[in-house]
Image 1 (cartoon, rainbow, N blue to C red):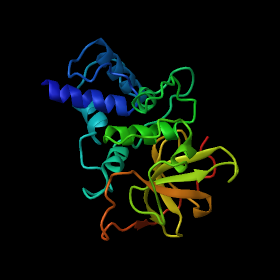
Image 2: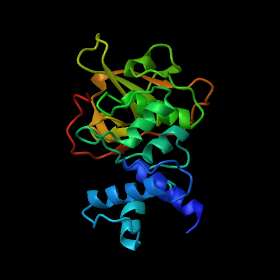
Image 3: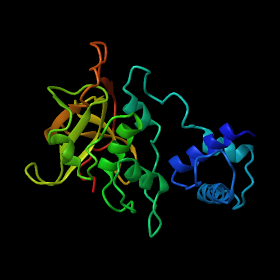
Image 4: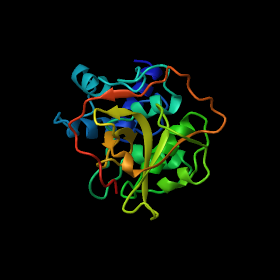
Length: 238
């Protein structure tokens, strides 16, 4: 197996919260340790053998694939965000390597996944696409002079919600993916039930929709997808 293959394995391990060390395509001790931890997490025998069953479990949704539910017309940061779906915090004293990576790529060097990390996630996705984020850990920083404020939601827009109180300082931030059957905003974000996923949010909580400066808006064919969802509305993302 060549370096490109092991880079893919390392990226998949990192996306699932297991630190493989440098993404360098070299299967060293840290990559083997991450393989063992991943196998333990899914009930496999705790050894570093990487056979077809482990490969299938880890790479069934590889990072390099076309994002599920997305299209090539979606903005870069939304396609990147879809690739992170499933990343979770790690309970206890350990911390998710993927979440720590979000902080680092957002130029925010927190060392914990216990700190609300929605802004770190959004920042990392933007920075991965060459777009300067607010480089702040505060969700509401995206509603304070960053980018272009939109008059309505569009696919990939950065959406900021109030949390606790509309006039307070707490908030939540993520990316618009569409609407549910009741007109609620579908938001792909981090720290939603301690994970990266898509949830529905009431439009009553929206503070605004934003688009990065210097990036052209999508054409008129960029329509919000309406999906049926029986999930309860998100009410607290701390």
